[in-house]
Each structure stands twice: as C-alpha cells, then as structure tokens.
Length: 180
Image (tube, rainbow, N blue to C red; front, top):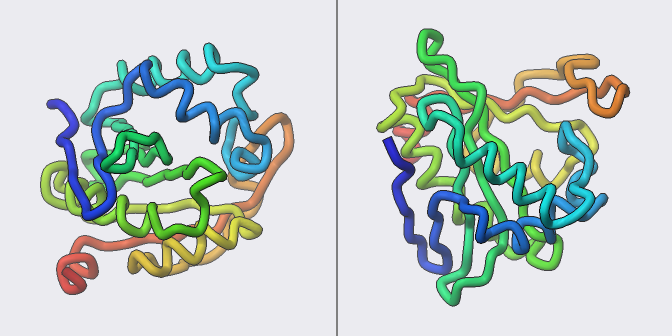
C-alpha cells in the first residue's frame, strides 16, 4: 500500500522522501517548532534526512507521512498518522508546519484529506491527537477539525528525560462523516 497524493486548492500532499530533508529541516531543526515534539530538534539536515528515511521505510499499515507543499513546489510542512492499532481501529495524527508559514491556515487545508483517508482506506473508527497543553495553535487546529477534547493525560510523554502531560483529543468516524 502506498500513500495517495492529495490536491487541495493551495497544496499538494505526497509521500515524504529524502529529497524533502532540507524543507523539513526548517521545522525539524527549529527549537521553537519542535518544542512540543517527543524528540529534540535535528542537529543538521542529515539527521532530518535520517528521520525521513525511517518514516518512509515504515509499513504504511502502521505509519504514513505526507510532505505538504504549495502548488508552486515549496515545502511547508508534514502530516502523519502513527500508532495505528488495527484491532482497536484507532490511530494518532501528528503535524508540523515550517515556522515561516505559521498562521496561514495550511494545516487546516491539509488535514481533511488525510483524516478522510484514515477513516475510509485504513478503516479506523477513532483518530487521536495528543497535544501538550501549552501548544495552543495545535489545540485550536484540532478543535477546528472537529476533534473533541477529552482530558489531560498526566506525565504521559517522556522527552529528553522530562515527563510532560498531554491533552487527549479524538475524532470519531461518525462525527467526521456527519461534518462532511
């Protein structure tokens, strides 16, 4: 199974490749952009390329990552699903936008086709987004996409030896189909 390509009015979403390392490094190498991720910023473009390689080689039944680029070809971010549990019919969604492209509504535009893909092609019933309480932009995005805030999972994440809490958001297939 390969990841489908999605076109939106401003964007193209396609499988991420090592050629995207420089573009993704604008986000992965930025401490501010990575402050809410569970791994530290990449030291250099080659470390970002290695992270892309690991993602691209993952079995798409469990993990998939799309590069998000403008129609003109500029890399602006990435979105992925991970932690896919077929038996429980759930997975988690994650996203990142290059800092110079923040607050342009790009992820609001990019996420819906990925969400639809997860519900229809991957047959999940529940999509989760686990977002740190201070990450207000991602929390607003989740709400805009129809996710419901369920509560705080205390010290759920351990990053760089530090425990951090996350707010659990979820979106059910029935809710998504009603919105669509």
